Length: 87
Length: 224
Image (tube, rainbow over all chains, first blue to last red; front, side, top):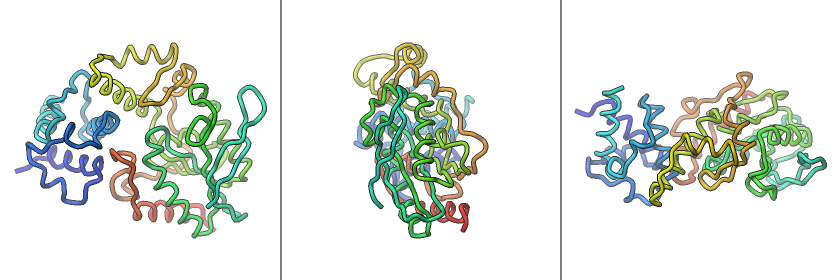
């Protein structure tokens, strides 16, 4: 069963990537994000992370951001879930 | 809608002509629009103009001036300050005889306080700087350079900084970082408009339903 973080993260990605309703539901753990989607440049990633902070009620330190967590949907979800569990 | 010029006061005295996009039919309801700032300005430009078209059709004159140093302006961005921008928007409001003002995102920081105003998804200056600084740190890291937020802020206050391609002067940064939208305006939240905020998009987009909702909200608020 998907938890709240999973749903919220899909909604955030829908807004950032301008996806159609339901499109983010097809994202799997290994769906590629940063480095796979040309529109996700550094400004867009900064926006994505800031939006995650707002909607998931977490604080992301700049030195926590690495390529691995941004590479796939699963990586970003694992990061967000760990952040929320620790908050 | 047509391009227009308006006299923008210079900090050294005198005026320079700045650009505005206007729908001016000499109607009594006249709305000054303060655009979103920096990258968000690009992403929201189309929504802003589409909303203007609808307001025009609803009988509201609209005026979308450039902030000095932005869009078509010939002024150097790194010489601007928030005080200059506030003065510029007040001057544009006088020139176009605006009766109301609408600020968008960071533009809410610069709506003339004398006018009844709406603030769409208002944002603090600190949030804008935080995101732009994060974008710079990420871009630098990709290029193999490690930077941190604290050092960048110190540098920005001392000698200015380029963030996400926008050169900001030290005076601008110091004055800007503490700004928050005034509480006097009527806030329009994204929940009221529906859909996701277009400033979040990785690429500039548009949304007909959101433009309809914004125009409807503003037109009914301004009234007959």
